[in-house]
Length: 300
Image (cartoon, rainbow, N blue to C red):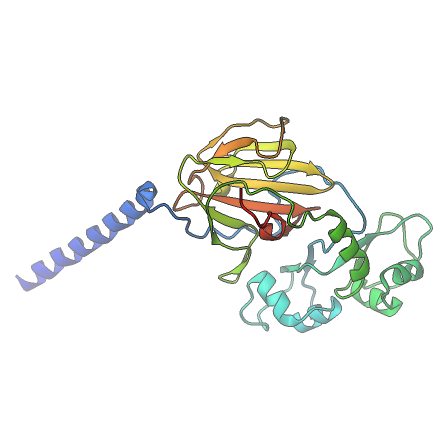
């Protein structure tokens, strides 16, 4: 008799656990009106094949490196002029000794890429970025530094070329210039979260509230987009793009020109989300920046 009771109790426990799971999964709309953190956006995955407008040397483009036989994380970090911890954070590596041949690593921002021009030499590139020729040879694994060909990609290690990158960013990043897209409060900031990058800010707002374009531009994407849910992407020119995610409804179409302050969507909780909010991203030449640097300090 005792065994039979225990057996029924185990079945009841399993059924209760399954029921709780289904309630959590199927009733997100019953959550309070605040924005829980978004699913961290995957690094190295573009949210749209958008036209890129170059405005000077690339400002800290992301790079990928495939681990070679005998490589250690310390060796790779030294090659790119980065601390080991930077590579660990960028790739979610807890143990610096656990990397394998063929593994693809993301090299964090701060490393630049230069495209070789016709007639350009390694010495020319070294002078431009103020980096020793020997460092360029080591970072790029060049067997013959005197042989370069037009179109070849040369990696500039972190800490060099900052005078060029900073000038490009300062000239194009609209600091304190963009209008607020929605009335609400920031529930999750830009930056690292749970060991992964959160490439925008979450602004909590009531469902159905209007989402407005932060600046005039042309819509390059409008519709469902995976974990982003209903999304709008706007190209503002000069390499600047903004993304608005988790909308209840999209009110614009690709190719449409919108003015600053024009309503483009309504706040919702579509995609990977547990409450109504706007996930806003600001990208310059494909690189994410903290939207709070660009939004005006006085909210409209």
